[in-house]
Image (cartoon, rainbow, N blue to C red):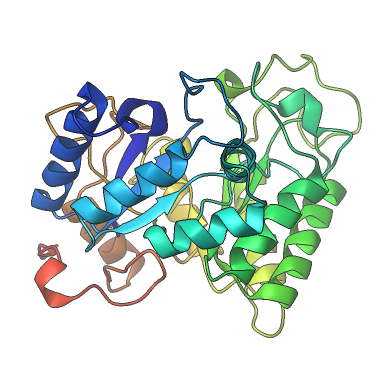
Length: 325
């Protein structure tokens, strides 16, 4: 998968606006660079009219992106943004997701789950942003699956949660998967201090860590447990475990390779910043190129494969050449 991240607020605007012109240029650049996916996340700025129930800005953005490059898979809008889009347009979440799918949306990010425990979620919420309860997150993701939009499954670890709470989170994801079979992969993401309010340091007694942030051993152990629990086949299984390499120091670090040896089977996507506006999306400045993937696969004794967002084979005309190690 070759991915271009875009932030909603940077590229959302009516035809002829500065944002629309930048959006078209960035999409054209992504196509030229060999992207197979556009990943769009972040809240839409408030409507200038301030009228809820009539604002279709999110849906307009889906249409504009899909019309500009229908060959790119559009992976967009976290559950919190889906809830916002539905409320602003006067639709139910199911109605909005159905309309978005018909307009060109291909899948939704299953981020924002953090840990599905309502005693912990408030302490981990991004400051100043709306949040969902665990059940609201589950309901929105399940609805997306039911209308034909797959999603990723995620867990943020290494903060205030215990091992038992990690397993409970994974079990709850399994329950969703048994009902919908809509998760394409599981992504385990270490806690990033900059994205939340400060946690107590030292942490409360009884946790598997003495300070915020997981040690390498916890990262390796959790990926192994997740593989055994979630990807062993049968009802409720999530077929792939992806390495969140952008949060583990880069795609070629020893820890990433250890995780790939001990549970994960997917290195995720190549990220493209481009030259027009490198900071137009999340994780700007973090890039993984095809040569890096080939080198990692060679060290692991595996054959690299370029996939689509939903793990199908990339059409020959869209494949990147994979250099020999």
